[in-house]
Image (spheres, rainbow, N blue to C red):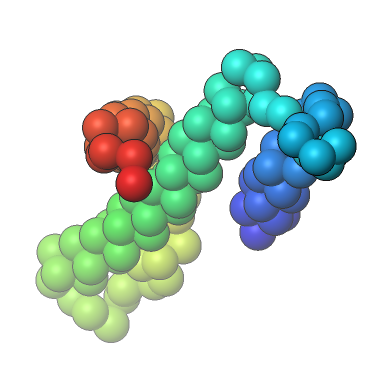
Length: 118
């Protein structure tokens, strides 16, 4: 939760930042340079990656718990399939979830960049 709050805070800082410039009628505004525009896309990419990573971890835990329950013959001896699934996630599957979420985040950023500006 703190990481998501950090992404939102960073996004607000990026949106409010820039170089002070003078516009028409002596109005002042913050002009965005290339670094600020790139930081906006980078923050959005990190946000997508974190969201997909959390969803992937949730799917792995649910799938592991269901598979443990389904393939256990004696259901009376079944002990905490959720904690076993979480342990297996952190021990064996975290890299796969990270890579999958990275690929999905890259595709999502590509989709956003291909949309025409309105």
